[in-house]
Image (cartoon, rainbow, N blue to C red; front, side, top):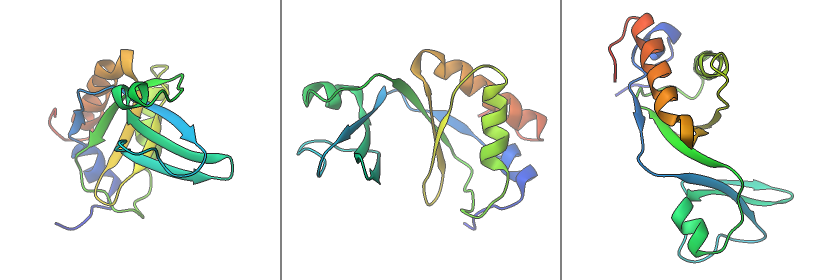
Length: 136
């Protein structure tokens, strides 16, 4: 399957999918502790940021202050596609929802406030419908 670059087709084909888990952002000095399975890692001068399931962070006694829901956009977006992140972020921002976006090779992953994740999913489905797609 070829990655999509056309913004209209990207939005129509979003097919957002909410993961049932709860995710947290934490940071460590050095490598990730044994036993963790981070879904995202980001190396920064201040430390290694990890996005892990909340239960993993709790078991490892890692601090966090933000609990997120993870929404995967099932459309296969090209890494050089223009406008997808902006359109999705604007849709959520207009509803007062923050959104932390991580681009994977095949899909974009959105981390939104867990308590409002279902609401975010609905907003993204409506965005897809307005763009010519079907609800996910």
